[in-house]
Length: 226
Image (cartoon, rainbow, N blue to C red; front, side, top):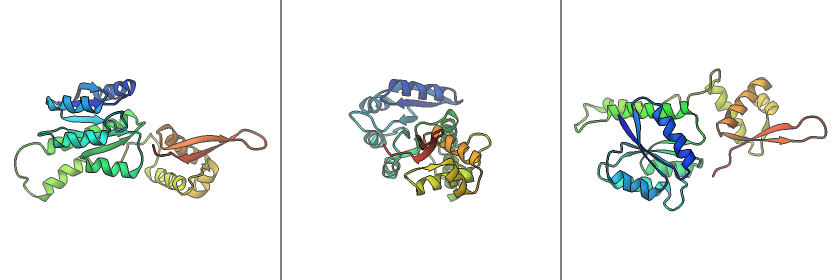
């Protein structure tokens, strides 16, 4: 059983994460704390295998917490769960020892996939011994990383989603579903479905734009960092 500590300054969010984890076989939540100092103190007591760590917390920032946990003898592994989307923070978290970086909001399926990949990695990397060869190391790291990325909703194509993301990133002022459809060579209905998926999972923002007559048109923009 993998023992998990949930760290988030928002009690309702922390409780949601706890419930998600407890739905995944092989994992148990042994504590929920709402601050960095509490997380470090709880981990000093042992019995923590994995910390699900928020970053933007009052007092001690999550990146500081991650570095402090890495300095502990036999410290836990860290998986970052955060709303921060800027790449500098992603890199800083990786340097601080985070094994995964999951952007809020996320679905149960997304967190479940990350946890199961972590479980495979932990099983492959357990023990105090030398590895047989490079292939064993590669296999352990491959267990941690999902080459396919986050699970998609049924009927969505990863290639089309990549194309829609690229279209949005190229036009930060926003695009309509019709314009995205022209760019990626798909129907407006298809483009709208992918845009709505991104909006619902926090990947973009949507805003109604009112013209001279008729219903407002929705414009989709890349999600702002923060």
